[in-house]
Amino acid sequence: MVAVYPRLLHPVTVLIEQISTTTTAYDPDTREPIQQAARAASISLKCQVKYGASKETSYESGGIREGERGYALFRQRDLDNASVTLAPNDRITKIGRVEHDVYITRLEPLGHYPGYANTLVKAYFADRQPSKHRRTA
Image (cartoon, rainbow, N blue to C red; front, side, top):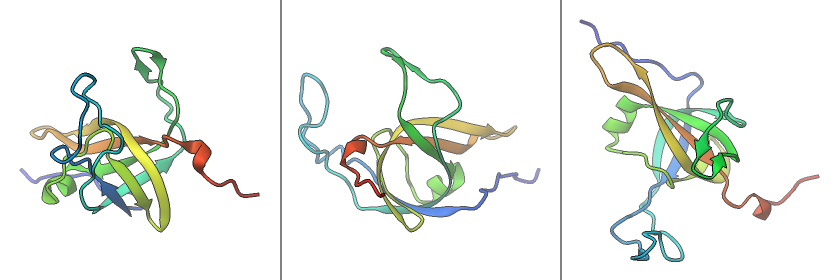
């Protein structure tokens, strides 16, 4: 049987900074980072990016999730080759040539082929502080 893997459309390079759970100080009661989370060095990966809010409605315990700015679609094969496991709160600092400050909010495994687990990972991202960005006229 020949291995079948999906291809990315118009792949671009992204820079991701993952949270370093070993060096980040956590509050023992809330299990959340105190002040600023420590991050590992940037990782460069190829992905397919779509900007804009997701069309699917997403729910949390507090209601409908809002504020997602788009998603980055990664091939699981590329993540495995780079020894990367994406997680919510990983920071995306650059997409193509454009600087960003967005964070992965949720992950969705996709592309389940017979005989394989998921072959794609969709990482939705959101801006945590949109008011800090400079507006252009």
